[in-house]
Length: 333
Picture 1: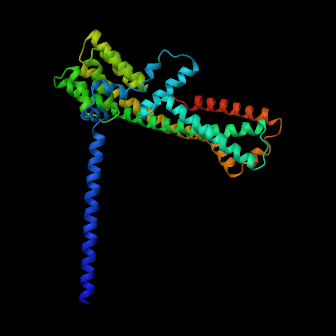
Picture 2 (picture 1 turned 90 degrees about the vertical axis):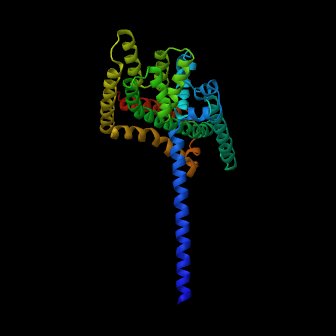
Picture 3 (picture 1 turned 90 degrees about the horizontal axis):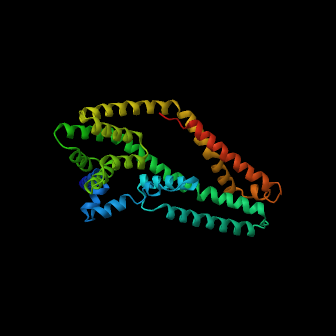
């Protein structure tokens, strides 16, 4: 009996020790994670010994303004991809993304063609067309959707932080700090993404750039109307004078009311937007899934001559439908 009691207390002590060690480890990891998220990326790079020019080039490597002279559909697409990569803070450029997509596309086409040939399917124009469509449905939408998702999540975070940044800016002005010092305060107090962005603004102003132009460039990089209103307020105050702190305090209230209205519109339109997403994604998902499960469903009819006309026409109708759906569910507030 005494042996069982001793064994019980030993097991209880072991359990308590493991539990306490686990709690200490999780607490330490949580504190490190909180500190890491509280310090923005720009300050981390500076603390590692990077020069201001290197930090600026690192954080602005995918700046869409670098392609502002590009025109046409291709130029607009490149700027959009660069903006998404910049907002998502991914460590590669559009050329690398395009190269990776080409490699994935070519690999899928090659592997699928070999499998179709081994499965005794004749490699006709229709079969090649369906294989190319299958490879394109995997190699193109998936990377772009992933990048867009990360970018929009970071952009929403930027929108949420901006009214808080304005409040800090207003308090700094009312306590007697000049505009440059108030911006420098934001670079130290705010988390990413807005902390690093205002840090870039502070660096450019320190090198002699005009504050209004730099803030306008930041608004264009993130495509945010809230920052554009901030720039307009600063420009008007510089030209006409007035209490900048009071102007920005009122602007902060307007932005919060506008954000509340925007969220209300999103809630009311959520069903339509979800329907639009389903109608956009479901055909691609169904096509890829069915081709993976039963490729013969497509390959057996791909040899028909009318397939070369019907399938491209179907793809064209799908693209037209997606564009129309985007126009319907894209509500501006």
